Image (cartoon, rainbow, N blue to C red; front, side, top):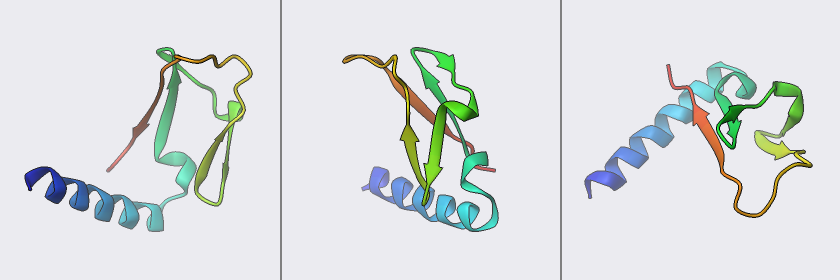
Length: 68
């Protein structure tokens, strides 16, 4: 039950932050442990669209959300 409560709080907090700040300032994207430059992906309607040609099956993509 505690995990569900924490997930709800994090979702609620992210929704509040997204209302105040542009979506593209809220996260950093790493592929295979390397920070990706902002022009390497697009944000459309709040969704992240990856345009990586170098991705292969099994590659690790990490997205770190910045919650102030």
